[in-house]
Image (cartoon, rainbow, N blue to C red; front, side):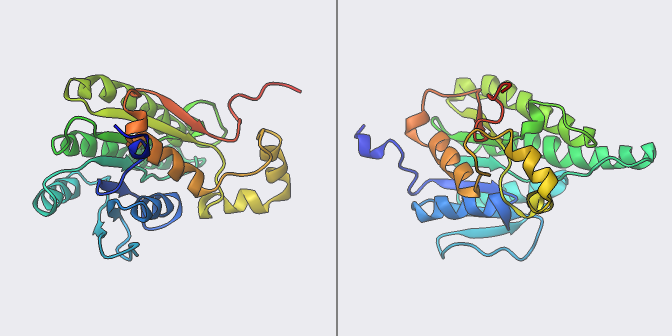
Length: 249
């Protein structure tokens, strides 16, 4: 293969969940800019796609029935998928009411873990050798953070799910990896970024002295979807500015 084709994702059929806004939209837009045929899937119905080669689909990944319908739709429209990026997720902080927390736990896991699993298994049936599944986890999959055990547990489970599926799908030549975002500037992190005290605490953990951009995640997704990563499966790729690697002063 020509070296010029190592990072080529043109004409690949790419599904990105949670792509109406934030990281997911930037990831989907970047694939589209590079010539991929992208399906933007999101629970929001107002989805702006990059160009007329792309399509959109309203999908709640916490609903198995909606995933079934999406699978049938993508099968009829394209007949195959080359890349699936499980980016959709929710974060619901703990409260003082354990019964309410259990409800939040169920919603979180149905979205962040069960939905990614069910969609991956179905979509893998439309994939061929060389296809790629990428799960977006979190620093919370690697470290303990305060006040959000449901989210942390769900992302930890998603990390291990990536490894399990990498093994299960390896006989078909389908690669499964996870990307571990650090603090990325999005609407979800706006409150921390705008809070001087919280921002200072986070800034001190980042080696590269800046918060990440959604395009940083897009670059990692493009790499793991391309032939440049053809011998990579079952890994967790931190895109965190050095957060996880940083030791003490």
